Length: 223
Image (cartoon, rainbow, N blue to C red; front, side):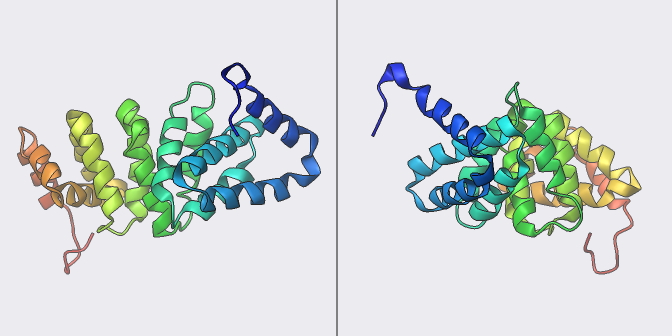
């Protein structure tokens, strides 16, 4: 059932009121809603995801977004990444989402979680806030499998939109011992794609390559 145009704010109001009044049952409501996000057709699932993000941000309830992340990580990661990427630049609560992305890379995150954050950073978030996205991609690259396709895609996407920013950032990473691995992984990710290779072949290529060669790489050639 769809609401009439003049009632489009009613669903949001009812949802927020339900979460506000039924505090003792939030866990049950969250579990049910997350199950719907995982099971419904893509369009309907997208609306559920948006609704859950709205509740996460309204109540600053990280349990909601964490459960949503874990439920969709394997089967609908791209859809979740698109929603999070848009939310990360929202002027009202983008800082909260960006904080979640950063914290998801703490300790020893799974490769699936790293790939999710990479996809978020390679989307709308990276296009509109490249410096902030690169902060999170730096952390992701430090802990990622160098062969991660989502990470390579994210770096390529950012470099396509913000070539100079990305290349200068890579040079800086390669010049700092604590960031060397992130620089290597990012360089390899770009070089692994045709578009990334084209982006690398510019006036800064020699400087970037020189920094890469100068690194102390272990004997088997792995970062």
